[in-house]
Length: 233
Image 1 (tube, helix red, strand yellow):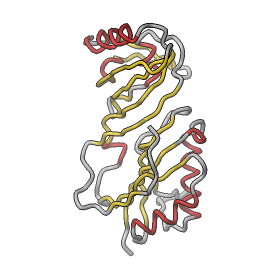
Image 2: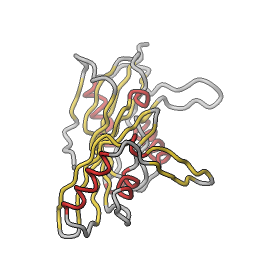
Image 3: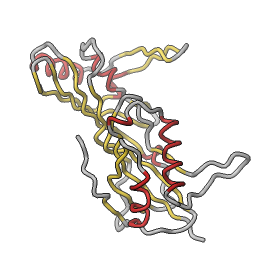
C-alpha cells in the first residue's frame, strides 16, 4: 500500500461565504467519502480523516485560492480524483486545480507566509485621500492595535502584519483595496482591521481572498490537473 498526498486548490463562492471552518471541514469529509476516496485516518481513540486547510477563512469571506491537503491510503491518478470529486461539490465550492505533492513536505499551515485580498469598501473621500492614507500607514514603523476576542483583549503591532496596500475607485462612494497581509506563525492580518486603520468606519462590503503565498514553490515535476473551473476575482 502506497500513500499519496494531493493538494486541492478550490474556490469558495457566495453560496458558502457564511459557513464556519468546522462546517467546511465536515463538508470536505462528506465530499471525499461520497467520491470514494481512500482517505487515510489519524491514529488514536477518535480517528479523523487526514485532511488539512492551509488557512481557515473567516466567515463572510469568499476566495478562489483555498488550499486543502488530502492524504490517501491508495494511489489514484489526479484525473481520477478530480472526476470523482467534482460531482460531489455543493453549490459555492469549485475545483480550481489538483496537484500531487511530496509526502514529506511540511504542512500547508507551516509553509504559509502571506495572503492577498481584494476588499470593496464604502468610501466617501476622494480616491486620492484614501491613497494618501495608505501611503501614510505604509510609512509608519509601528501601529499599535487592540482587538477584543471574547474575554481577551489582544494588543499587537498591526503595521507588522501589512506587507502592501493599494487602492482604486470603482464607483462613486466605493473603492477597491488590494492587500497583501502577513499570515504565518508571527500573526495574520485581518482586512477589516486594515480598513479601520485607514479611517473607514463601516465594515467592508466584500472581502475576497485571491492568493495564498507559501514558503516554497510547488514541487518541480509534480503531477497537476486543472479542474476546468474559472476563477472569480
